[in-house]
Amino acid sequence: MTVIAVGTRPEPPGAWTATLAFGYRALLKIRHVPEQLFDVIAIPVVFTLMFTYLLGGALAGSPGRYLPFLLPGTLVMAVLLVSMYAGIGLNTDVAKGITGRFRSLPVWRPAPVAGALLGDVARYLIAAGLVTVLGVIMGYRPPGGAPGVLAGTGLLLVFALCLSWAWTALGLLLRTAQAVMSTGTVLLFPLTLASNVFVQPATMPGWLQAFVRLNPVSHLVTAERGLLAGHPAAGQVAWVLLAAAALLAVFAPLTGYLYARRA
Amino acid sequence: MDCRASDRCLRLLAWASAMHHLILDSLVRDNLALTTVTEKRYPAIEAEGLRKRFGGTEAVRGLDLTVAAGSIYGLLGPNGAGKTTTVKILATLLRPDGGRAAVLGHDVVRDAAAVRRKIALAGQAATVDEDLTGRENLLFLGLLSGLSRSGARARAADLLEAFDLAGAARKQVKAYSGGMRRRLDLAASFLVPAELYFLDEPTTGLDPAARAQVWQIVRAAADSGSTVLLTTQYLEEADRLADRVAVISHGTVAAEGTPAALKANTGKTTLDEVFLALTQATEGSTV
Image: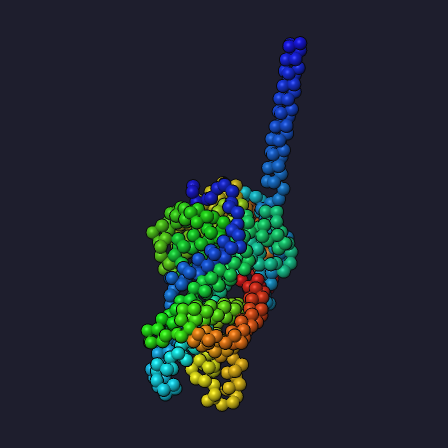
């Protein structure tokens, strides 16, 4: 019978091989379930179109003058919304019981989460690429050119990867994937809307200005505007990297702790 | 002179060959001793006083279990008796709250990594990815089991064929029937050889033909020298397959022995009757 494998069992995979295997799985999931990407990416796409053509004239004189201001903002919005799926995926894995099989295998313990991050990178790149291409189609020509776009995408990727640890922790704390989705949306919408994505905060009431200034999304959007415009603001970029490091420092260990307990 | 010299040579040769034999002999004997020692030194599973609590309910309370290496062992019990929790503890998925357990000579808590290198798990406690195709699941899990890409590909093809899934290999598991999922899940646990297979309700939801096929595979696993611990709700399955069974009720072992001995001791003719008598008796005593 060929069913039962005979001979000696192969050596367990190393940390990197195991992480790559989980990354392979994450890419397969994007291929088989592209909805996971387009559900949330529809929102920034609609906002980009609507704000530019509907309100661009009123906000900046003309849609063409508003787009360079708006696009870095909706770019940030798209990637941050997609980052939620890191938590949804982990929650589904635990709920369905597939983490049981992972834990019974002799693989590096953090590999499932580390490999999922590789899939996240692919997802963030697709989201950022879609919004950038949409902008270019609408007539946006980033003054920073290709280096500016690459630097902007890189910074956004770093921030989103650190933020995704907050979602993985949430995914392990909440019981269902729907709860992760709705809690994520409830947290992300005020953060992305009450920011400088759509308008300068100068026109807002004082209390809202105070919030917008504290909001890390505002700093990220300002940093992106600088990079895409070709005159990066070092202070803003540093601020974003610091916020990202803080997110990582808090939520990566928390995810590890919760994963060991729940999965 | 010549003669004396050659005599000496001969004697030297004889001595050398004698030594050679002696060394070889002792090596062989040591090897034999070594293999018998490793085979007999420990049972495949040895658990004492296992306990596990979830919130207010104690799923496993003082469970003892000894499973001989190379045997097929059946864990029987109604839903919620603690079978899956026990399997999860033994397969290093859950830490016990009390008691201790050794699997293939390794403590499941202190030496969990060593246990994982020797076991395979299938069933309720472990599952497959619904978004991926059957083939992709086996490829991915094969890579995680230490197979090379080409090795995983070959093994996936063999197992899909053996479990009657070749036709559905490129379909997402989402579209599989319950029985097909169960077979894929089982196939995944046979990707690499294991010394101990944990099969948690391997035949639940399978049609009779598929069930008979799984039984054949379980026997083949035991024939290859591995140990199989299977949980089941089908008493006929335990009767036909298992060398010994334990009836689990309310987190402890209510009865243990060969199916024949259990029937003889309780004066029942089928394992069904034994099971009902035992589980109802313990239920009555705890109320």
